[in-house]
Each structure stands twice: as structure tokens, then as C-alpha cells.
Length: 173
Image (cartoon, rainbow, N blue to C red; front, top):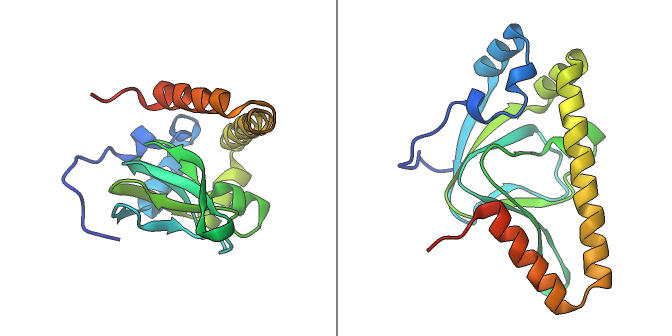
């Protein structure tokens, strides 16, 4: 973790996807209990095989979710942009992390301890439903990627990947 980058950080209520369905007490609880961590480019945020201690929200920057493969090759699973949550799947499943997450550029992450996150899930059905929706959406994307990787030729896979990146991140000059 590093010192605060030069960019202005949005408050947690502007980036936490479930803020609008939290009760006023839960909002205050989150405000009182989250921490802010800064990461340099390529710095590891979450390690595969470790127990997830925090539900995390990317506040600023970009991060990559990846797995280490055969022969020191890494496979990027997805890219995260500000406002996206991660680390919660392993917490909910009570399993070790199944992926690594590293800062793709200087990034800031809001972190909420796993037990506090689970407490909110257990007591607020609307929050629980939001995370259920997110998990269901992630599963649909995973299914589509599996079909894409197993049935399309390399040019089709490349074209689809480029269109996805353009749609998600736009085009920089």
C-alpha cells in the first residue's frame, strides 16, 4: 500500500453499489468501519488461495482479476473499474479466494471487514438480493465466455474481446 494518489477520491456512498438500500444505521455503520487502501501499479490486492478478510470496492483506478496458469502464464479473468465490488464471493462461499487481484494502475480500494459485510447481508434482504443479482450476472458472463472460448475461432474471440473492452472502457486517443 502506498500514500494517497493525486486524484480526488469519491466518498464511499458514491461508489458502494448497495448504498441506496442500506438503512440509515447501516450507512453509519459502514462509514464508521471501512478503511481506505492505496495500491501501486501491479501491486497485489488479493491472493489466490488465501482467506478473504475484506469485501472490497474499487474506489479509483483499475484492477485485474486473474489466475496464474501453466508456465508462469497469467490469465486475466476480468478487469475491474471504480464502483465494482470484489472479494465477496469467497466470503459468501466461506472458501479461499479463487483468483488474484492486482492494481492495473495506481488504485484505491475501500475495504469492509468480512464479518461486518456478512452481518449486513444477514440483516438486510435488499442488500443480500443485490449481491445475489451480481453473482447471477457474473455467472451469465462466465457462461458466455466459456461458449466463446470453446466454439469461436481466434479472430472471432479477438473481435469480441476488443468490442467488450471498447464498450466497457471506451476509447482513449
